[in-house]
Length: 267
Image (cartoon, rainbow, N blue to C red; front, top):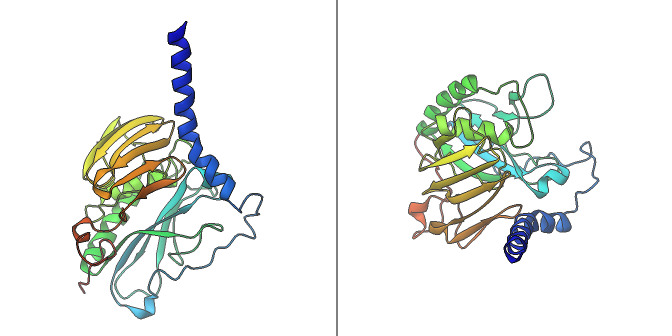
């Protein structure tokens, strides 16, 4: 009698831990009920204007998803600018339109329907130019170009994780709340998006990742909980990364003055 009761108590506590973060985010959110038509989509001013630099640029962004989905997850996207171009091209996946994948001219750092963007990676110069070629090749080969499923994938985070895995210049660690990043295109084993470790995933529902960049993440129904020892951090569902160091900063610079991750000054 005691064993089933103990199992029930442990399961209940574990589920409460998984859902505590999304519940806290929901309680603190001011977005509930806001129409997408009225939501902020303005530029955050993070990316340099094309008129300010000739260099090629690649940036990866994330922002809380729209409305209640933002209690659980972020939406991620990639922005590119070839050398000398007068505009950026934004690459992402959405659940509307006849095709899931979108590549279009636009501002790279706009709010995602009221939620401010966060810069996850920034490449410039020759390294960015090489990455852009590989990014376009990866986009063309994306296996879910006409598919979208918010949970557990394939979704916007599945797309960005796929592209990152195919582009050696992008060793980006996506947030643990990027639900869908663990939805794999082929099989149950793959490299971690950053390329610094490996992961096991059962269609995005359950999985485990161990990586230098991402740390250790356990995926339960798309909600990831984990630790990042190098960043002195824990990762909680809904809340995300809580630690003493910026997880998206180049880790070789942690003993130096802060430098934005992966920025190259090459022409």
